[in-house]
Length: 86
Length: 361
Image (tube, each protein chain N blue to C red):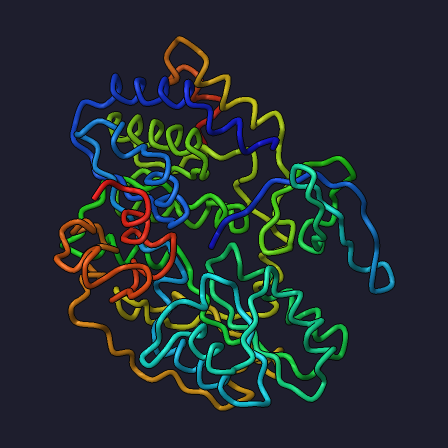
């Protein structure tokens, strides 16, 4: 139910007198339309998380890579905590 | 697919599990709140790979499962009237009410439609001006903004024959209800990542502090879950009852402020009955006065009757983590996804359905 899928923004268009943006989003080649009303600052080529036809979050590529770095590190993960803890 | 398949890398998952094995020194009970996470844990076989000292408790985080049968009955009742088109997400159609599911109503001729997005319902309403289009809106904080957006869009386009039957539920009050239950013993939580995408995680800090439980925001892919578990166990072993974010690629502390503003604009909190758990104060969202012409409860004078649960179902114990699906004598026999006795078997993301579909029985 809370499934949200990452996709790449291919194009953006304005509707309702420019007030609301909609995007064509590619999910590994499958293109679907999504509303950008809750994520208005998205640019073409950004990766976004889509839930029930609405973009809810931009995917931070650097943060995505960090998880792999943590898990690839042979040392203790705890040492990385200052970057990670809140 | 970028940001999906990479997080299911088998080698990295196995390495992560080994790190958990080295880290864990005490027996811990960790609850994954979200049904999507339960589904992933079982589907990818992670439960069998984790150390036996770690017990995962599958929480109440399947909004389809916890929607009371009395609200489903209302949706069925509307759908059976010829002037209505009843729309919802596919998961919701199969869930049995007291008499039947929406799918059964559809098979008997009701106009029931499965939608990918609530925004599609506005198009249906415009194409059918003589019908009343009702969207049966279920979901947590992840889904409520999109459903709220449909109301705003209907308002913007002057669509009058559209309304929302809101059965929305909220995660933090349910976590507190579980922590207040003396039978339920939870040492730490994996918080539901996509709920936090919208809401951020400020709301979890008082829970972590007041109930002395670490809470780690986690994603849904195998690597996300292992990463979230590692951090939770690390915090437990170090007696650190704080909130951490292990899903930073899509979750920020503040969350999506635009979505939060929309929730405030369209909805207000209400008490909500959770199937399998009971009434939890302020754990639901209903349409507020400003938008009440789009509230199906208001528009069609609907009342939620008190729900009658199937007494053979141990859903309450399952959803609070007191019992496992295998502990139920009806599991896989009298109770299956086709004929569910209660909440956790009704949707793929319910704990019982996940065990039925993927685990060895």
